[in-house]
Amino acid sequence: MDRLIAVLGLSILMAACQTNTPTPVVSPSPSPTPHTVPTETVLQSGDVPAGLSPCLGSGPIDVYISTLAHADANLAARVGAQWEQLRLAGATDGAISLYTSTPAACNAELATTSSAKSIAAFVAVFSDPGQTDRAWNAGIFGFMPPTPGELPAGVTSGTGTGLGLSSWTFNRPPAQLACWQKSVFVALVVGGNLDAATFKAATAAVDAHLN
Image (cartoon, rainbow, N blue to C red; front, side, top):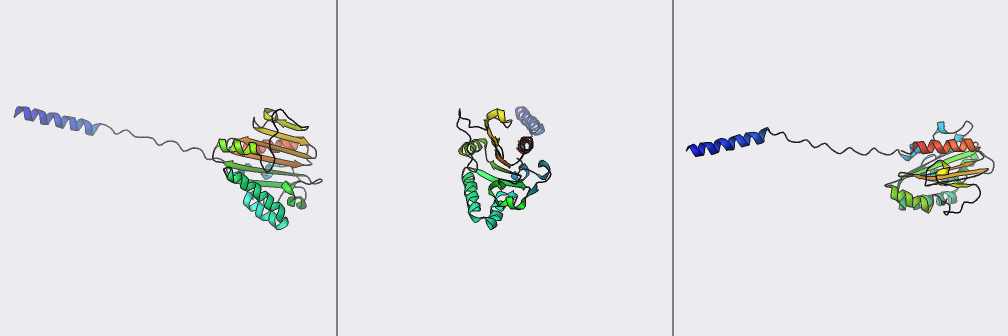
């Protein structure tokens, strides 16, 4: 009997110890910070110089294509096909903003004409940097990075652009272009009849939005 009491006492003591042991609390893994949506990464009104007004259709890329179709169905179809290529490459969202010195230029490809001042910015976001890199190398809206070791007049590639290793720019007035990859974003900025400082400031503004 004494042995049974001793065993029961020990069992009760062990149960009490187990009951009083605090249950470890597992902290949930922190959620990744969401990326900026494309409509907030393209050029905003405060990023462009005075005298340039936003074009109708600036915003989500699908809205722009639909708006453009009313003015130029063929151009809208071409832009739509280029966007579809990016979507098939993994793009999940895209946006464009266009600013011009005259409304008529808004109906031109990327708002670029021979005489009007203009600037357009397109940004697409992908699921991962690998998709972004492949899409950038394949070309954004038909603009492909230069072949390594070959730099035509007016072209700068890599870190010399100020936009990172995966970047290239073209500057031969009146046309200017910058195309680069950053994290899960690809960006394309095209300017017409702007001075070099204004165009560079615009590309820097877009780059700062890519978070």
